[in-house]
Image (cartoon, rainbow, N blue to C red; front, side, top):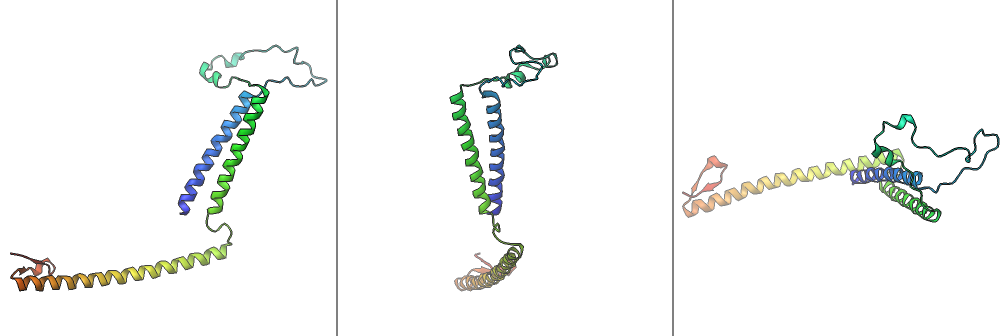
Length: 172
């Protein structure tokens, strides 16, 4: 069970990482364009700067790579709603992860309690193994008895008992 929980936990952490990346990408690309406030003492103001395209160092990039980073702003209300929904999704995913962590064994036990529990489980395994060996021995004895009964029955009915086959009888 612990392995299942750990696997689920890893899957959920991977999903959370994807959600973080997707949320960051959405917020980065879809935020409403707002001019920054004027800061006194700056050499250039937003009115003095003309919008520009990619610089000369960006001209060798494939168009598809540049298209991934293009800003596609949405209106402010849509952005705020999406921002709230993305935040709720992240909170929900972290709560799922917290529930999985709570299901892990030993989360509320100290090391000594966990060691005692391991010893108890080891003792249970030994008891079960002894019981299994006893049942296996009993099964072998019952098989021998059954072979003897079948051999006696076949001898009584005129069959041939072949001792080379472990006492099991065959008809001739």
